[in-house]
Length: 544
Image 1 (cartoon, helix red, strand yellow):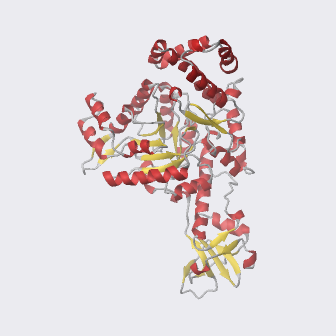
Image 2: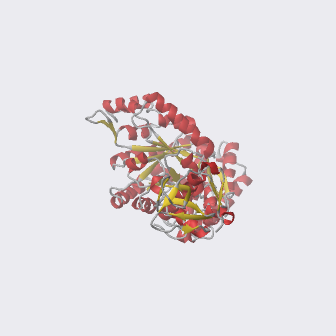
Image 3: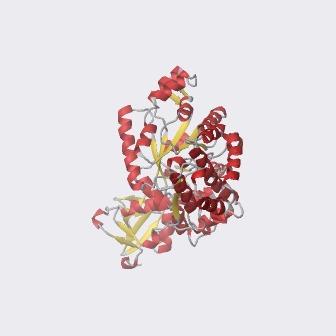
């Protein structure tokens, strides 16, 4: 095949070294098929060769300027596999094979099955404990610890400013049951529960080093929040914990010698809680902040910085690694997988969505603060109805102030029952979960209204998980634009259908595709340009 019909194009040819290639095997004449085959063989080196105006490729051989061989080396790269991506210290600390973990999705959507599947395949998953009562979380702990003995996993601890008792009970459970790695999410500032979990695992080793038993990965999307996890624990909280007898004097002292988090996951435009930050802006900013913080404190083990939000295709994962991410975290795309706790109807909607099919809606756990979550808008009216409730909450000071016509509309279209009956359900729910919520609501009418509105916001996510019949238009399905990007990537492949989506298999394809694109970028840096058809990794069979 002549060079002018080749699927590769040479440029900046002065970069080509005077190297020759030699092998006991004849190289493949370059066609699109042979090029893709040899590039996809990630476990072997790759050589692009030229002889008598024709191009060839091979995965075997040696190169040297001394060889008397007619094959001229155009470019080459070493083997590069998924396990080569990211920071090796992340792999060694958590005992994973790959620098990717599946982030938590509340209400058990990132389920036991999901966490177990990831752990058994050499990845790591985070159980979605947010919104779950301690009894439910403890059942998950028992099963995951049993099935993943010696393998990596995480449990989520979510900030609960309006249910602090629930956060306390969850932290106590993790300490009691020996959960040694958690993912902290939705924190705007440090809480005593989070600091307690971190510090109760500190001790001095005989060689003078500090043992950190309780590992912490913090999800952040703002520099001011990231700073709190990159620095030592807040001294005021440390003093409070010591005075309460929750930590020892030694642990209080050691707290100032280690950062609050082992890892900080920079969460960009993601599903659920998000600030909609662009990854290309926020990730470098927080890496720079980490470097400045490390220069100030000189921690023995600097905090790593990973990337989440928008990680759905090989190209997006590669972009994160190239910007310096130590690891990547997936979220939305896992929700459409077989192992997730989402209902079949929700998974079908997710598999059909496009990147623009998302909207922001009030968050149930931080409703009063005006915090929003990113959700699916195609096939559901939750975002619009949730926003309506927040507008009513902002406008009136109590349920009694709501005009009768407005109230009737809310009861008919959103709650599908009277607000009085909803309040009765709220009393039963919070008397079992956190009675102080009811006490405050009885004293402040606006707080009562908030609890009633949160009834809908909270149940809507449960309805989407259990597949509640008749409530399909009220399903709250957390996801970001990345879900649509994933659907575009796998369109026309076996992964297009939700019944074929297994979380570890998707994760492996994502990383193999990332490694494939990395090899192409290595070769392009040597003066070769590949045709558009070569630069896309297509998942063609199940790997895990």
